[in-house]
Length: 81
Image 1 (cartoon, rainbow, N blue to C red):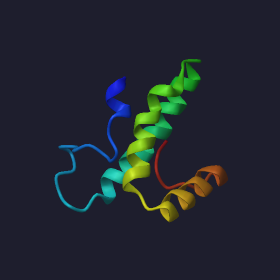
Image 2 (cartoon, helix red, strand yellow):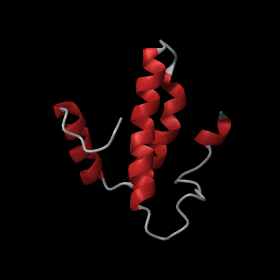
Image 3 (cartoon, rainbow, N blue to C red):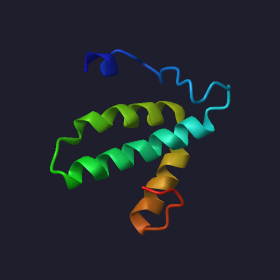
């Protein structure tokens, strides 16, 4: 678990080798919410999901995250969580 606390930016992800990290940002946002949903449904600790949150917060512009959070809250987010 110490590996997640030792970085200051998102680590390399072989699924997204290009300079443009938009898809990486979006995928980690989805993965964070999916992880929270899955672990919460099983009454398990969601602390493991924080890694995805740290990554998407490192990659994504704040304005995107705010917009997505608002869409999730309103039930009209385009991604499948």
